Length: 390
Length: 248
Image (cartoon, rainbow over all chains, first blue to last red; front, side, top):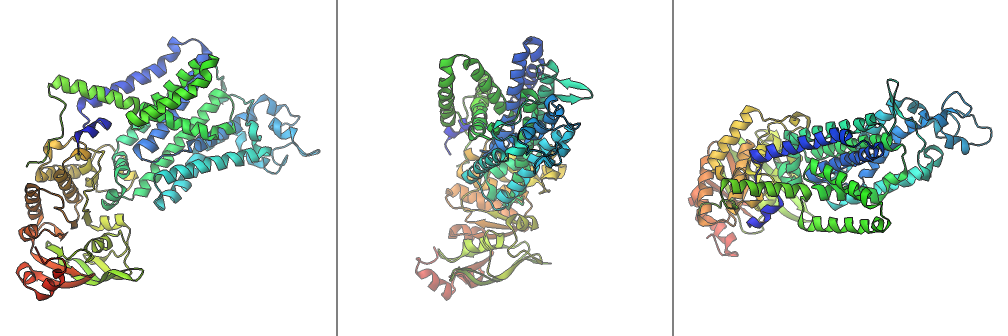
């Protein structure tokens, strides 16, 4: 092998690199948790909260794409499912659902479309409305935001990976699936409000405290969640299982011959990644106060992949920062009308450049710079791998 | 129990073509067996059948008395078969040490591996293998950057770390320089006795260096079996090899 390929990956993880890694994590977490001290505009805080949610999606993508080598082009499916589950609960808590002439909450859109004379109760206002009954508990809806994506991902990945489907076929299957579910969601108008999605939601309420999306407390719900997910994810990829997962990405056949059930590892991490996306969906609804079929648009799922690629798909934090950065820049730039359209072009261009020249994204640049600094400090020239004794 | 690997009447039928046809042999514990044969004799297919890559249509494979015929690869591996491929197969994006650490895990399950550190026993085994394969200078190098020879030794090292009871080596010296071939023979001779090894090899100079017993395959069948001297003078073997220029 020529040593030219060494630029694509760090050739070693030295102590300095590990320390630098933790330092970057620490700085990031301090910045995320400390943002409200610097930013006192609640509208911006709310915006940033949404971008932190996208950062969580970046982590989910990095976990499956970077660490497991599974390109999921339908991550929006799990995000969307997570969002709808919580949105259903918050919809029932909304004032409009409680003011429909019934002592039990009924979503306004169900009433608008109800057959004349239908009973205004979730049990039977239309054929599917009974599905909403358990969502009267906010905790049920929030639990389902994670449980449903986990179940769907487990069933899906079990069939895909047991059959040893890999590479681009996984991308095609996930892409087709998110489109399919999006269609079903829109088609099930009586219970999902179809194309319009679920709007006019109530606020997340914990112990009597209402989390108004434009409050610092709500920002903290998102920021702390992101921190926890980031650290848990980091722990997960640092475990033995995380290492074995990476080995299955590099060479599944070799991993099998070492005795590992490759599919089991792929299923486990794919499912965890879906659970994170579902949790992100939950948080997004809390911060943005709506759920819409647009969460399952192809474009959105592909955007997630772009964020992760730009930030560095082999790094959980890199992908997370990539998502936050791109969205923040996009929001700033989109204020100007001319840039609004051009932005898509710019981000497309950046994506192409990253794929061609920076396969490890921003995180890769950081690692390369650190490696260069380290070699200079040691006084050794850029080393090539010592060759076999000849 | 001295029979390590028992192959009995093993056959695979690829739609009428029998790449391996009623092959039978017994490899004793601690033995180093070389499988010779002209191109297309079915040597690599035999390894595929034993290691579970290809399903056999008839016959059986037993490992220390346990039936492992047509089980999935990872189950066969957990029973104690380790395999080295003709083209070196290592985890190219992981460092040499990480490669060995993956091989060292005594636990195959996902949940059992949700911990940060290896058990001491596994760690000790990794250190032993590092010393044996002389890979210390490149421990933190990504495996994809190793020289061809180092990559082969790393793969061998992984099989030892894996604690395979029976090791299948498919042309371990293919593409190696003389010096690398020599070093490989050294490693294999060090493994002799403590491991049971089945080697497919063409390079006769190398075979002479390591071989004890030789099995000759031809057209998917066993042609001859015995010590080196006997095989070299066997008229049947000479005849089978005539088409491909004899044993060289």
